[in-house]
Structures are given as structure tokens and as C-alpha cells.
Image (cartoon, rainbow, N blue to C red; front, side, top):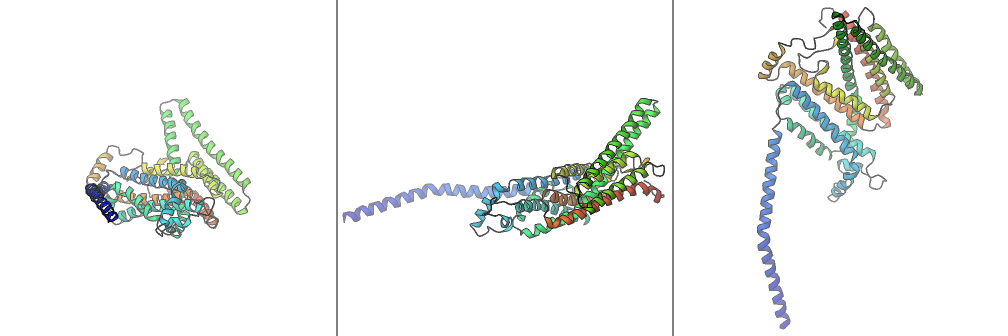
Length: 437
């Protein structure tokens, strides 16, 4: 009986302690649940409000918004691929506890290998980041061609950046085969970006030549002979540096190539670029030696990419300059009033032509929303940024052996298409005499 009495007292004390603990814990639990509910609701509201912010004014702001979207995609690709070993295996282990250890990106993790995150995972992460960025550009392009260019270009800027992050998160759970196929498409479509890059380089060469020639003519009008001669010498030295550099690079590439087809490509490209150089300095087109020298240098650059002699950082550096030039609106990729390419002695449009009339025209268009010309330019910008995202995906991800032949063909095609475009800029004023260039 005494033992039963002692047990009854212990049970009563334990129940009292539990009741007291419940009394103390109930308010705390209620506060935590209330705080969590409020925080979750506030977080959702804040995200919605944040997504609606970031309205832009002007076509230039829209172009820079596209540029920063591209930068975000590149930074995500670099960050995720270079730090995959620090977070991917642990994340996949935790997903494996709930039966999702081989879903999506986790399927390429090898726990029994020396490195649990092989190059395949890094390549897959690059493809996922760039595919998410390209998907946002595709959506903006679809809106632009569907009559919603005003909203695509100027409204909900923050939502576009949030969309890249959301799509990237979702892509981590999608099969790897999808992004393997995306990598093949990226290789095939990288030629579009290279051709666009050549257009900007051609425009740069013409603008460079026209600017220095104007300085020489101005010095001649002011009867300052030494200054005129200095500008002319500067033009010749710059062109000579481009020409000699391209020839030296081509000779080195030819000597290091062991494939007869590659040697034929190198010789053909340099002979064609030299022929365009000779055509440019004749009285027939009078383009000048400097634009031809710039094109020869870019041809040598493309030949380096053909034989895979360029590191990724070199390709990305020129790509960054190209994307920045797109944001600025170079080569006619900006507003409809923007200056365009110079062909021969006369520019397509004066760099600052119509200065008194442009501000009024732009302010009138801004009050009416996006004009048809701005809508077209925004759509073109989206297409170019899609090709840039594909090119970056190709440049950052290691190329497998079964894609190397496709890469080689794409680069060779881009080289000769770029030379063809430069040749067309020379002969276009002669062929289309009724058009104003």
C-alpha cells in the first residue's frame, strides 16, 4: 500500500509538471505560430509588391535592363558551377532522405567517385542558369511581337529578375537530358551571336575611321599641317597594327594545325580578308584601310576560336563588350534616331544629326508610350540577348567530344558570314544606288 501511495504521488507530480509546462508553452507556441503566419503573409505581400516595382522610362533604360538580366544569368552560372562541390552533395543527401536523391541535378552527383561533383554537374548548372535567362528573354520577345512591347520593355522590371531566379530553382528538379539538348542548341545558335558581334565590330571600324578622318580634315581646314599629318599617321599605324597582328596570329595557327581542312579554312579566311582590304583602299569604294584592318583582326580572332585556341575568359571579355555596346545602342541597335554604320566617305547618319529635333521627337514618343520603331528595336534586342545567353552557355560549359564537330562547323560558318557582311557594306552603295547609306 505504501508503494502504491508513493507511485500515486509521483504520477500526480508528473501530471502537475506537464500541466504547468503546457500552461507556459501554450502562449509561446501561439506567439510563434502567429509570428510565423504573419511573417509568411508579409513575405508574400512584400514579394508581390516588389515584383510590381521597377518601372522604366525610355528605350535606353530598357536596353540596360536587358543587359543586367544577362549579367545576372552569367553571375548565377559562374557562382553555381564553381561552388557546386560545397552545396550540391549535401543538398542531394537531404533530398535522398525523402526519396528525391536522384531527381534533376542530383542525378549527376557521384558519391562513390573521387569528386562527388563531376564536370557534368558543373556543365548542367551552367545550362540551367543560362536557359532560365534565355527563357525570360523569349517571354519578353513574345510580348513584344504580340503588341505588349510597352509592358515588356518598361514595367515590372524587378519581376523579370525574380523570374530568372524562380526558373533557375524550378530547373534544378527537371531532367538533365533537357539541358543536355539545350547545350547542343546553344552550340548551334552561337553563330548568331558571333555574326552580331561582327556587325558591331564593323560599325566600330567605320566609326573609328570616320572620326579620325574628320579630325584630319578639320586640321586641314585650320591649316595645321602637323596635326593633319599626325591624324593620318595614327590611322595608318592603327591599321598596320591590326593587319600585322592578324597575319602573325594566322601564321601561328597554321603552323600549329595538323588538319588539312583547318589549314584550308585559315588560308581561305585570311586571303578573303586581305582581298577585302585591297578593295577597301581602291577608288571604287574608298572605305579606307582602318575598317579593313579591324575586320582582319576580328577574322584572326574567329580563327582562334575555330581551332579552340581561346580561353573562356577571353571569349567572355569580348562578349561583355558586345553586350555593353548593345545597351548603348551601337550599330543602329538603339533608338530609331540613333546613328548607324558609316560606309565609304559618307556616314549612314550623322552621329549627332538632327540634334535640335531629336529631343522633342523623343519626348513626344515617350508621352505616347512605345512607338513602333522602339517596339521593333526591343524585339531585336531580345533576339540578340537570347543568342548571347546561348553563346555564354556554350563558352562556360565544357564541350563534349560529340559536339566538337558541330562547334567547328558553326565557328567556320560565322567566320565567312562575317567576312561576307563586311564585303556587302563595301559594295552596297554601288549596287543599291537609289538607297541612302
